[in-house]
Length: 331
Image 1 (cartoon, helix red, strand yellow):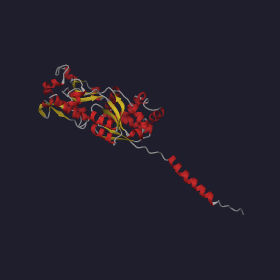
Image 2 (cartoon, one colour):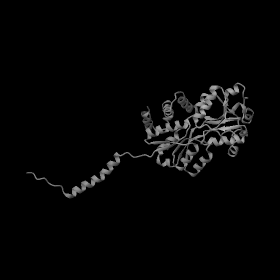
Image 3 (cartoon, helix red, strand yellow):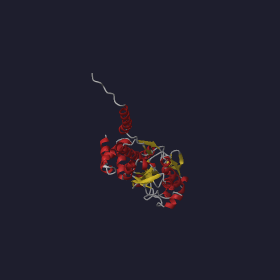
Image 4 (tube, one colour):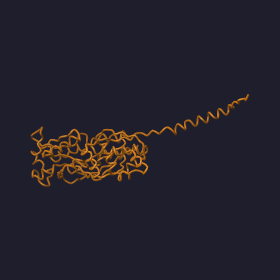
């Protein structure tokens, strides 16, 4: 009968020791590293929502980070970004947010990664047909508006006209209030705040379809200014000192930047490199927004449209391997 030899105790201990060393290493290799979510301030206007979803799709499918879209308006979004509750603002209108923006940059908590789109505009407008049909003169400016108050009667106050301002919570809400007072228009016009961007859009579209007067604030890139012919009301040219003192001049030239919380530079340097390369134009934005309107598409669908329509643009923002992953993930 063959005798079975028992292994020596020291070999058993050695084998167990090696096994104990290798098991954690194998577990580390097989378990994926968890990446923290990249958090975006998700404002209530369409263009920032489309940009958020374009960037989030690329970050998730190309870089493997989860993303969170956090509903917040201009001021709360900027505050949250500086505080570190939010990582990315894809569409920060620099001049409108000058004070909060400069404080964040000066403190080092916020980092400006560069321009998203450089050719934006914002200001006060009326429908072009009001000038074409002679209701308003060519080259009308803000100081003419008291004379035409009765054209813009507020349905809730027959003694004054109505001025359509920003959605509550947007920084331009404060600027428009100050401009109205500085120009002396508070004696002639009530400031009306639509509850949402959709409500502001509906006020313009409704007036246009009925051929009625409309006076208020708007901006681009937007589908509204791509679809409806609106004429800016002239104001004194932008002057930095006047703007900061009274807002008694035109809005500053539009500069729309991508700003991140400084913690993202260390936590996700690959994402930061991508966002530094991210740049679009007003024409591209208008096209995506017009698609969204004409097709009754969501902002998610408009983002996918952009990624398909402008592949030659966004593929330059990322390395080739990342672009391949993103294209493979597109529906």
